[in-house]
Length: 152
Image (cartoon, rainbow, N blue to C red; front, side, top):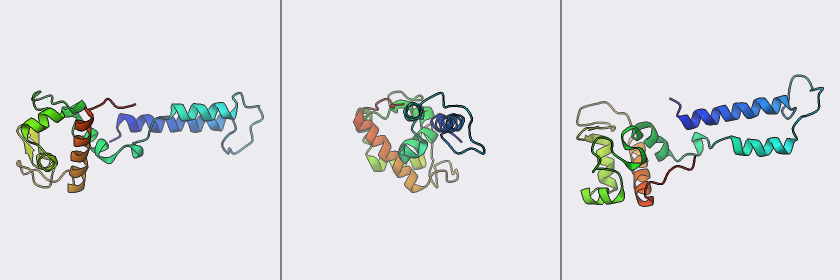
């Protein structure tokens, strides 16, 4: 499943490729007979601004969080139980350190399903241990930073 960010990145790359072919910057099957209407330097500057960050530049934990957790925990919140957010103060009040966060991601808790090899509901594996660890690391980093808004 493509995220909105990865769809934008692919569309930006396609637009830049199509524009560069039309202005004679990329190889074509036949040479262009018309002069380039836009200087190459302007096209380069446009491509650097217009193409968003690709999903590969996104940290693994962030990508996994967006794909699996953000529906309920966007911006570190909790749409089910607001008092149990992923803010640093709430994590500390509940006594959740990194290993506790990993355990909750793997097994689930309350209304939250487990995403690990064996969840309390007996559901099959969805995330590997490494992926769970990356999500927990991302959650802790974001909690420490106050869940800042993404740059994009």
